[in-house]
Image 1 (cartoon, rainbow, N blue to C red):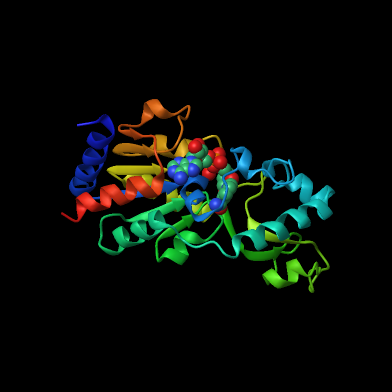
Image 2: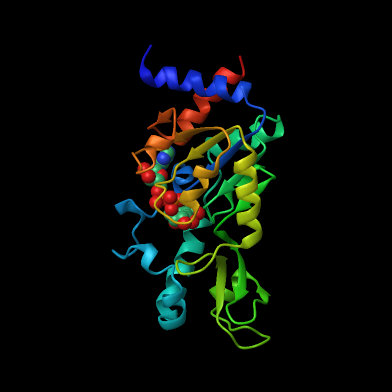
Length: 242
Ligand code: NAD
């Protein structure tokens, strides 16, 4: 048996035996839905690394660029649908195999796939609000470049920008879920972004990583499966169904 096959079988066995499995996902979860991650060259926008535009600094000091970037992002996310990996996680939650999903993704695809207990650690691009007073607005208002009707402030998507703190409730819930877990499955993240990259260290039990490439935290996981999330989840799902 190949090492890959052995890891797939082991993960299926771990899921079967675990009483409290939770999942933490990152941008690699959604690349198979056609949404590029931030680290790969394919994820760059007009040769600008999005991580330099998704910032408080750009929002406050370069609003034209910020708006252009997020208008482009809204448009490019429109046709994207959950992939097989999102659907399998929703099915696993439904059948009691996993308890919740913590995600760094802002694309809303876990929700679209049918997952219910989701902790969005970096917010959601589907919520638009005023940067000054927090009043809620529609996506259309942002796209039409309107200002806040209440205070005249700048509109922005409800995502956590680089330079901002994480939503406290989502963070506390995620921390508690991971601490309680006896199995944590981390999927599609470089674990480069702080503080989310510290969450796996709080895990109460075993930790598994499914990611295309190595991360600097690989020694904290066993097994590590370096392959596509959708493919791996599909294979594990096949074994769980037997
Ligand atoms: P990242 O871009 O730093 O890392 C993604 C990782 O996923 C990489 O290590 C890559 O090798 C791996 N990967 C890519 N495709 C994969 C696949 N099909 N299967 C398995 N692994 C795959 O992403 P991050 O760690 O989530 O951090 C980036 C930040 O940017 C986050 O804060 C996130 O909010 C944001 N972001 C979100 C989205 C989204 O909502 N879909 C997309 C891009 C970036």
